[in-house]
Length: 249
Image (tube, rainbow, N blue to C red; front, side, top):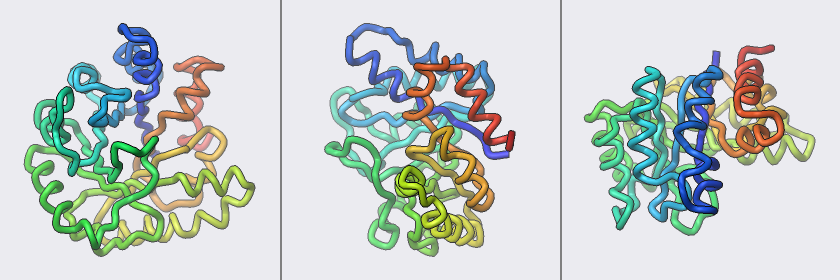
């Protein structure tokens, strides 16, 4: 079964919009885990627009207490700054089970593309090696059709398929036009010894079709849609609905 890691960034967005501690990111993450989620994902950005460094430390403690995966996403090339110690420092201090490398810049509203593996290979290889040395499994963000030879040469354990284009195709009514490229890329990664994760704009509506159409997806990271749906149906119920979809029910 594909496992579900819940991205709790949007809880932090809501909290930060008002200041203070509510809604509490750790309490929300605990509710997701109590409902059966297999792990928690965060993407702390240098501008601290949502998840902050203190959230990362607190969620590391929570996920250790639950013995579940903690997945930290981020751009390893972004330098440290006030309030953001840097991606490697956060990983070294919290030792997440998985570090997911994403090529996003400060100006991006959200992650919207994978790495150019041929161009970024030398730098990625260095970052992947450093993260693996502290015990992290390393995943790298990849577009459908990306160069899997170069991705594998980085030393990464997994790719995470950027599924935004699939979600757009699904919403337009023709997901089958998009799925073969994702399946081909997944199979190419697997043939080179890498596992496959997926994430971005996956929802209850489109998740089942994606999982059915793409080979052996190990993990999905879902945040924006899940938190939005939970506003209507509640967090625990929504997490359980996603688990049912992943279980084929």
